[in-house]
Image (cartoon, rainbow over all chains, first blue to last red; front, side, top):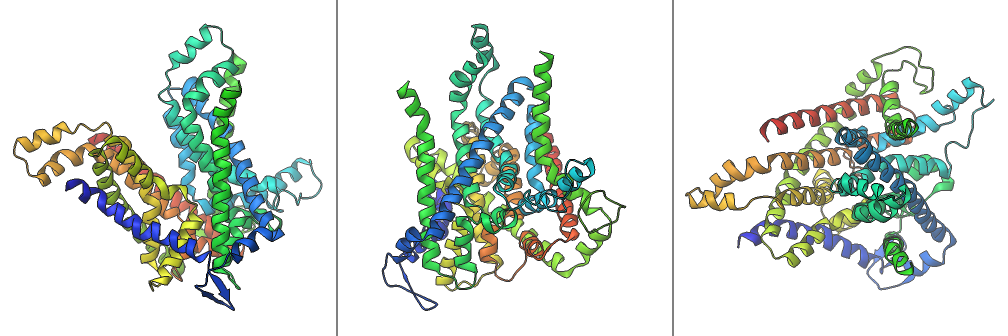
Length: 279
Length: 257
């Protein structure tokens, strides 16, 4: 069986290193802590503790809000960028997409570090504004605030949103768009009735990707968000690497976050169909 | 219409500025004499590069990162390409099901994959280290290889392979002389992508690499300690090396395509 030999290795790899580990994590979320040890005794207490604690609810909600906010900024921004590349600058489009992707090469952590250099108290933006005389003393609120977190996350994720949206726009012919324009459609109409529906698969992927990656991030909140910006990812990571760690609790939080994220995504993904029906 | 064109140009320029501002800052401060990381820059220096490359931890991290990138690219590239070939010989429904399954790890946050693997390795007594990190990176890289290769192979003309076989070519010869040259540009793209992802992978690696260093793990440690211009020097070196690698691969891929 040639097919089995070709598909088999990945299937085996996923079975061992993807399915079993995730199942172990799921199982772990139902186990108990006794002192500092995890004991295989079934309990729902990690889930009840996560849901009843105000802190855990807050960090979960914040992760979802930040993820949703980032996706809502990045997806339209990437859509406009791709639209302009595809229909206004078609000859430079590929080069400009490559350029956007090139920014990824400076590294995920390093770009976060650079935003700290820009937004910090003695950072570039503050020293620039001071020299211009716009402000008299450095703004503290540039960093360790939710706008800073959104700004950093959006910058990190924008190139990743450009990729799927652009590839779903490549196949839309410019004649389609011109025909609609010639028939007197307004710009808003061309976008809402023609371009967005045709590029919808790519837009959905872009939204899901940015939402997922922003909501699950724990590096940006801890480096740019400060203590007020802690998100569920930080709490989960601490349950596994920090002092006084609690693996079952971390596992339960991870699955609650996954479930909540999936619900938000489904709600957003079903929105276009719902709106069409309403119309 | 002129106003509109200006607006479009302005928007594209603003997006690129937003994306490259952090890159520019990194490159600029890797050469800045003062370690303060604020403007104006007074004087240029190569001191941070010297510091970065003479630090024993840096060299160790660089070596480990390169090892992980090579292993990840080779294993994920081979397995993912094989998988994509296998998919095409299946019926549409089974194929789509397996394709979705193959892409699934990309839909799970790296944090969850990282802790799930760390737990798994602990339960089975595999001590943290480069091996565990490599497995995590392969898992994270496979969906991207599968996605790229599947898109390419969908338009692949399988009749050439049959023709070669009918003319008496052995499977190995068919692969070497026909299949491989045809898929080389996409394969190269997939492998490069995996290499870049691996070099930049932090979360899964951090949970599974134990006390070993990789570039992102080391940078994370330095970042938490405070400001260190050597980070900028290191990042600039990595950025230009990766850019050069991709440009070379493009050139090489285009000539042979």
